[in-house]
Length: 172
Image (cartoon, rainbow, N blue to C red; front, side):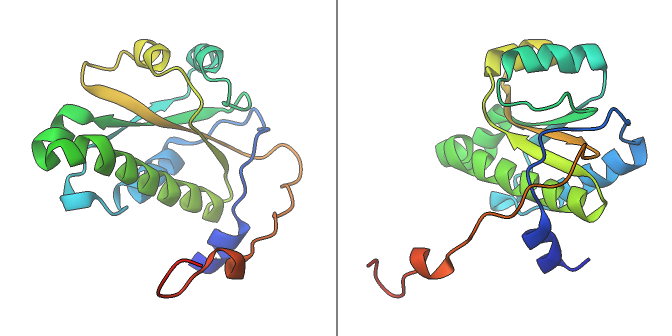
């Protein structure tokens, strides 16, 4: 699969088979995530892999956007204290978020290339996730990524209109 195929073929999947995701596959997904760009090469992301059914059930209670139930949730966190040390206020307030999003995109594309389904989730109660995962002070959840094997067909691709969103030299 080419990068272009992965970009155009990846979909957000919200129904998963109960089949577990293997440790080697999870390791590969995390590897893809840490190879994402990082502002100032700060690399302040942290990843919590959740495969315990009971813990995933608890995450779903505080995460209305979490589909599933997925057999695996990878929680992308940021050490915001370290982000501030390495990048000042900009590192904490913006770069950490951008870095998390780029790591998530790498993870999503890698999952698709590996034949896994995924869905990124931003609708969750951060304090609830922090408590469930026993995250230390200063480390906050940024995104949840559900991972597994798709149950059912992939949804059709929505239309994309490059010409309607692209401007040259000035807006308009």
